[in-house]
Image (cartoon, rainbow, N blue to C red; front, side):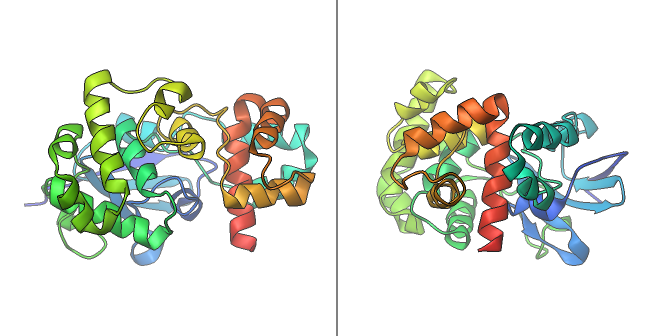
Length: 278
């Protein structure tokens, strides 16, 4: 008997699955047949497809409201792009190129651990590290083989309890390297103090620096004023605005003044445009 359910969301606008899943904000979604994407959100596995203005989600869990929220379908991205381009014409090309990007509503703890893993790492390895972590400390999601990209079970993202109890050497065996200590310590702190609410609280977590904190603020806590600065963004700000590559504070101050509460959206459009063109 089929263990998944199909949710069809009609009338969607400003959405492109490739741009959403390939723009660096998440690591558990992979291409499937026919332009579809398969992956997981926490403990829910799904396969999603888009035809015209109709988004189809075949999922092991979550109702329409959950998936509408996950894809941020209540936000008018056309208005955001227009506002960004109106305030800064030089971003218009990036906004056009990144049409369809939406900032997913991801679980904060999953985002914290995922972006700790992302430090000094590349996308293929990040994906492998996270999947190894899920297979070891998560649980198989019932029915997920029906929607996965390879017909195999998908595993849930580990709970804070599971990672807090994990041995550092066991985590290191998953090729997590020095990040193993950060993962265990962050899980323990998350359990002790709860979900961090601001950048300063994130910076108190072992192994979280300014760049990772801003990524978590944007992708996990949905602070759209956050402006993560990585190597790509440094190059963008150097090329477009003449900032010295080391002047991260200057870049962030500029973004706050120029883009305000839309700085996170600006970062995504610029990052995706520049990375793909290079």
